[in-house]
Image 1 (cartoon, rainbow, N blue to C red):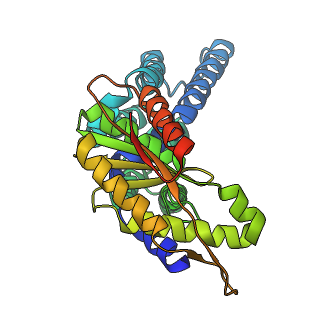
Image 2 (cartoon, rainbow, N blue to C red):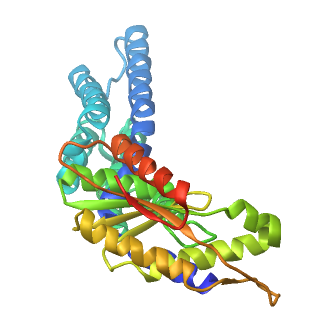
Length: 338
C-alpha cells in the first residue's frame, strides 16, 4: 500500500496549472496588503523628510510616488476582485510588473534607488505566477538588470542576484510542498481540498460529469474488531480497490474518514451507475487482509451517485449526492442515484 500511495503522489494531476495559480493567488492576496502598506509607509516617510529638508536631495519625485501607490492599489484590487485577469495572462502580468519596476528603478537612482527593495519584492513574487524555471529566469534577469544599473558595484549586483535566486527557490519549495500535500498520506487519494477544487473547476468549465460519494459500511465495527492500525490497513486496501476500478480520467479524493469522493469525467448518470456498481463489487468481492495476522475482514460499501447539470453549485451537488449516499446506507452494500 505504501508503494501505491508513493506512486499516486508522484503522478501528474488534472488542472495542475490552475491549482498552482490557486495556491499562488492565496499567497499574493496575503502579500498585496503588506506591499501596499509598505509603499504607503515609504511615501509618508519621504513626504516627512522632504518637508523637513526642502533644499536637500530628493531622488524620488512626487509623480513617481503617486504612480507607485496607484500600482499597489490596482494590484490589491485586481488580486481580490478580478483574479482571473492575472490567471488568464500570467506572462503578461509578470512582464508589466517587470517593466514598471525597471522604469521606476531607472528614474529613482538605478541600482542605488531607495525603493529598489520594495520593487524587487514585488517582481520576485510576481514571477512565481509562472513555472519554476521561468520564474527563476525572470528573477535572474531582473537582478542582472538592476546590477548593471548599479554601475561599478559588483558586490551589490551579486548580492541582488543571490537574493533573487533564493526568493525564487523558496517560493518554488513552498509550492512543491503544497503540491505534495495534494495526496492523503495514508491512502494516496487526493485530499478533500483538491477534490473540491477540481469539482468547482469542472462546474465552471461546464463539462459533463457525474459524482459518486462512497462510504464503508460499519467501518467503526471494523476498527473495534481489529484495532485502528489494522483498520488503517483495511482503509488502504479499500482505496486501492476503488482506484483500480476507475477509468484514467476519473478523480478519487478522500472526502473524510472512510468517505471517498469520485468525479466521473465525461459520463452521465447511467454510465456512472455502472462504474459505481463495479466499484461496489470490487470492494465486496473478497475480504480485506489484516497485516501480521491470518484474520480477514469482509467489508462492503454504500454509494450515492449524481449527474451534474448546468448552473449547479458545488454545495448543491454535494448535498444531493450525500442524500443518495444516505439512501444506500439504509440498505447497505447498495448504489443509489439521486
